[in-house]
Length: 376
Ligand code: UDP
Image 1: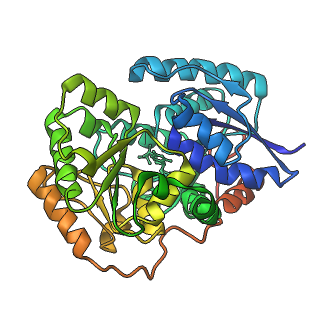
Image 2: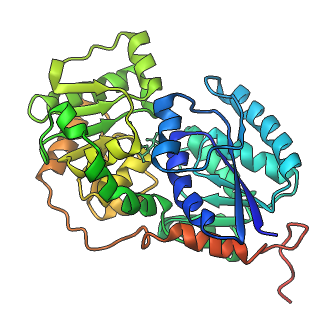
């Protein structure tokens, strides 16, 4: 019998991360994967496009839990996932990152005593006001296998008393995906032509994190700074549905006309092509900070802190001293004037997914009760 996992996912970055493991899993007859889509993201351009482009198996189970508050969404996800796990009876449950779907998958599995594998374990912003931070901390502490992408993640888990036998620094699955699809994006995406952009002379920006969208003053400052930049360097901003809704609701003023190009969210290949040709990335996305680095583009992170601290240390990424227009303008100017050297690779060698599968196939680390066997 192959080792059976149920992968619980529901949000855009999770589809992207999951594609790496799904591809490797399909090639092994010792491993089988069933995908559960919680429906946290459900639009064509936030969900389906990724399954198609990244060749992820269609979900066997789909819940509809999107568009609700944290409590209702997570509660319904736990309920739905629990039912599915009782039916599927997998050897392990796999969850990615830090969304409500991650936490729901982890809670449902832990109550059924099914061991959990957490990919992207150990990431910390040390900001407990972020829903993502709560989701990751709780998920890590009920997981059997903690697959961390970075040295900082490994250190954070050690500091929280996690048994080192459960922690595996395997590299970042997003790097696997970036390497795998880089050529295809160059060949197939026509987005630069469609948007009239010139290679090396535009900025790609994204803004969607609650700490920015829930604070109209802060969102206004970010958009004004991007609009200001847009007068010199075209800025393309694929708008997350949450941000679009907030702009519409609050009537935030958008200046700069054509210089700030607000477009709908794009698929992975178009996004990768946009990144490959960009002069600058400005973002509050976790994934984009790393992708900027993979594609050798300097980055400004539109947040007060980041989990991806190694990129700050490498001066590849910078955080504005203050998240107002002056602070953001200064960080952008600094990034545009910088010439960092990319001579280290803190995210592994592009084989994180294979490493994860190999480790899972070795079986449980704790005993059948979930308790560490005596080292005696
Ligand atoms: N992304 C995309 N299209 C977009 C915006 C982002 O394909 O319009 C990709 C991006 O390249 C990255 C991932 O989505 O791989 C990041 O997801 P998001 O910013 O939603 O979440 P986070 O990384 O902050 O958890």
